[in-house]
Length: 331
Length: 296
Image (cartoon, rainbow over all chains, first blue to last red; front, side, top):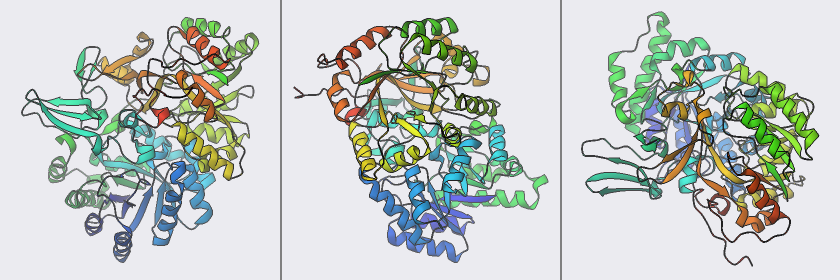
């Protein structure tokens, strides 16, 4: 299984390559990708030198142009695809049919990976993208259980990549407008969820409160640890009860599942977190490289080393991890 | 402008559904969508029951009947049922997942692109039209401006426009998840949900800790708390090139809602303001209520 790691900056890209990522994925500095955050992503020069650095080390670079193009900005998406081809990246990660069609037509040599934002959760959807746009790989949404991943992978006309570690979207990617409902900006159209500019922290009556476009997402009493107000991770009132009505602030960690993912035939595991620091990318890549190597060398003896777990636990949101939907028995 | 009745997004039992559609058959509707789009565990009607109901409706009403497909398609059983729906041979199908687009395009049959398909621009519209899409119901977060601009782009590509159907009234379907939030609110695992969403005819309100209504929990679907209501925006709906206004079923008062819309499309003046939200239509956060000024 390939290890695909995130980079929101040139130092992060280099860190990932040095620590043994097989591929690094990046984005342009605009709303053509799903991590369109202030100060994040690589400019043209950094991209050139990043691709050169990775290729010198025989590693791949994927570039995400994975938001849905707005009609008036179409030329930006077009340019992003052209630039990706010019840069000589190893794959373009996209979701919008318009973008996929443009890439297929104008850059037939460019490998296309279906982004998780494409929301393909079954073999028929994957067949559609493969037949029409000749995608070479697809990233599955994090809503599928392991049994479902296995089923989809067994029927899929293309190799499958799954999320292995990082923040967890509880909603099917590409199918969530909660952020634009509150703030006007969504992952699909703007490449952001719960944008930082809409966040306001304040101290109200001795409690720390987080607001998104003035909507109260959570309040914390002294000593409680506070997280970024991603709106699905707030505490809300349902039937008179206050709780994390949608999602607990936890992270995905599937290190325990490496043997099963390998058996299923998953081709690549993806680390989430282009918005994270180079130091984060470095540590997560190192640990995951060690785990994958350990499994490859002796699949039967594979076990998660305590030191890996300790390293990752310190990096996780809410310091808690979960197997996400993978461990569910549901249909 | 035509009026359509969207698929019922909530879980109602069989008798309630039957009564609801009997009432709807009498209404001035041009199009009626039927089928389960949210959760395949909701089986008060099977696919065969829906087909039977669709045939009855076709007899009783002038409206075009369309079958709406499931949105989040994961299990093999869901996929095979969807495949069967797409091959029904009688009724137009609304695709809400790319799997449905795959089946429908393979069969070369025209279809409706539902609001759960991510179609935001003219280039993408052209791709779906190539696959057989003849009617486009844009994602609910699209503004009038995005819709108009996408259609203009399509014109520039020399591709004929599809019919345009805007989600004009009802709780907005905003998100889909692997998790069932209704089951979660009752401390039940999703695998053992006991179909508890049947108790909530219009979902469960989710409020902020300050009591602000934010969302509506409807099984694996999260909807807006507010009713998205574009009746006061009727002139701009027309101006944006909308052919069809979609009214999404509510548990109570649907006939009155349809009457109000019918009256405006017959030429009566729209109300100056309505309760609910319309932010998305105006390019603002969806929850916002924007009052049109200076239309007269």
